[in-house]
Image (cartoon, rainbow, N blue to C red; front, side, top):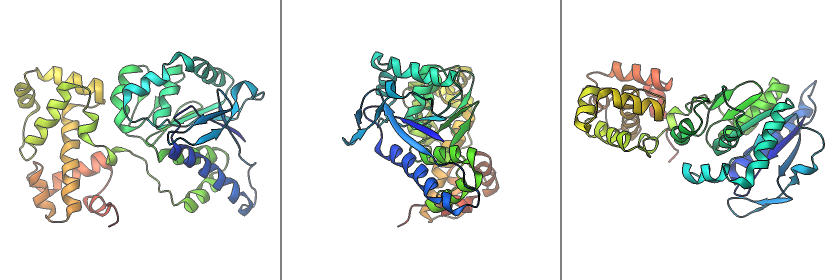
Length: 324
């Protein structure tokens, strides 16, 4: 399998390393299989002979103009940017027009396209994601949804598969994306590589979302997020929040749906669950006390919320903490 990793100046060192590490591990483990697949021949490509990574490292590359045969898969590595505005400026820069054209051409030739984290914006900007399901980094969802309304975005996903297109979420998801490409050729090899890399079977970015971050960029949603936190121990109505914010409930509904892809109630539930997660991991309160702190009369309602929004039990949420 011939794989191209498309990089630009400012490529994220961690994302690129995760891609190279996953494919390298898969190649190293091929000999352990009774019927190994063909090796993964990986080349880094760009518009020139090298790029500088986000940390200033020189990355030698093969110019796209010198690639005579199409790759079986073309993966775009993320760039080292967190904020959406400079990211949009980067992908829409006229200097990258030929890069976007190459992505479109690869798509037309049947090459499997893949991108993770900020790199999903390159695929979207080229138009190849129109009408396709996709994901991106959780904090970029509002910007992505506003700029690329034809894409079926679900930023809660770690991985999203369309027709010969794979997109992945935030930084570590580069490894999930690479392993998913290996899986297309050999599920057994992908499973073995996953174990060597100690990569879990994560399916959702939802547990990692920071509510106040996703609210940024929209004054109404920022105000609503703060209002919910100020009233988090109460059982309030969305209409009451909208009234105190000086807007109609329908306007608040439209705003959260357009920017976040969810209702005000779901966003409020995520804020409650975010706070409950902090309290559970602190370990100082009982589950019932935590439930009351975030506006529920009993623990069963909080348990149901955790299952519905995170797919986890409260015990699992409490256990998922950073090592001390």
